[in-house]
Image 1 (tube, helix red, strand yellow):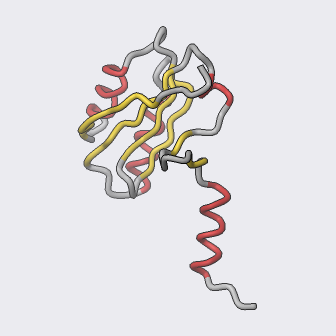
Image 2 (tube, one colour):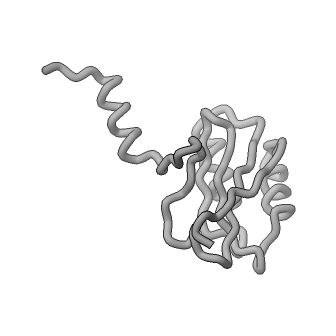
Length: 115
């Protein structure tokens, strides 16, 4: 049996990619994403062109007090962010991304099915 490099990368991507819900929405698979005191949002971002852009956004947003996790999906041009609304706001997150040199085109709250 011969496996191509493309096949290997596909398998690696499947192992390390986030879970996918039945409706196709990706979500972070961490315990605090199902806690009632956190909010999960999907933020659409323009201006990212490389992995360094994604890493810069992850670092800047991740440093905000109250942000529990952030994962940027470069090819899809969005980020999934989990945060505590008592410690930060969507406006602060949007402003941080904008200040980093990128444009937030829209955001949406991802419903917590466990609450």
